Length: 423
Ligand code: 17E
Ligand code: FE2
Image (cartoon, rainbow, N blue to C red; front, side, top):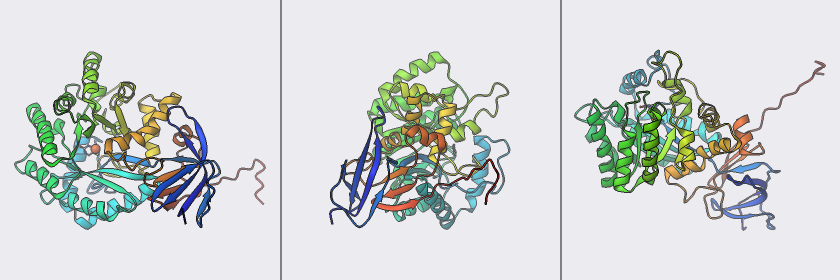
């Protein structure tokens, strides 16, 4: 048999031009082996997609799976700030066990997969002396690899220099196999320590040959300027495409003269950006009266200047954000609103921020995309284009991972009758 599965009459739409074509997709041994207007062979498993949209899967480029599904434990975040969230989590993390983390994270991964997310970058808090979250997520990375790709960032939530152990724990996390090294310069005790922490992250990334993803300037303070340090290190080391600055919400508060200069440096650095619209619209602006800031980075301007930007969910039901389902369409929808990305091309760009752009940041492009030779991981949406996918935000009709249909969702149907006669 040439194929294990054939998807008939799927609609492929190119992102930039919105050109669309109907194709048959042949899948064999977990790979896409044919894409053509009309595949002549048949196989025992075929699905007629009847012009439904075929898209690459969603990429969750930024989530904290160690804290998901803990909202209210041991208490709710009353101020709604990042910093109260860190305090609550520091109490909750005293209680964590490998089983606790794995159970919650696996529940979340299944919900994500059902919603079409097949590539996930998670942060694991490594400022906890036993590295339980890290160990749990590394074990899970292996256990789920046949249906979802998980990448783990060693994230020093409490700061690298906030006590004498944390620097050692961060390095140990890399020895244990974390995929990327993180930092939190705006939460180090001083500006100098923040700068030092960024330099240390780059040193560790070089020593262990890992990617970098730094929580950077996640504060409304317009004086928080570690992004320039990240850019400078990326320019110096020439590894910008392996570096990500997450959040960078202070960039939304910088004065325009500084922001203009910085944008030029960022273009030289060619680093990746991740904005988390659901979380930062709620965490930031908390110390403002009115008007209240939106607390997101300059997504539109970064995109217009050709930098790679993706969107993450960041949290689902945890000390920082008590809501959420994991849906990347919810994330994109919120991004469209708070980043003022409402033009047709801008909405399409937001779809790319939860798909292709995330794939670029995660360095998974060799297996990602609906193309011959790539992993047969794709989603089928009932909507006619990306714009409607974000507008309507339905679950995907089918989720296919590495050649297997792992989820299917039957759309809700509503009956409507003005006569009120239901018999
Ligand atoms: N930790 C952090 O520093 N920032 C966040 N947005 C979350 C955790 C969710
Ligand atoms: Fe985060």
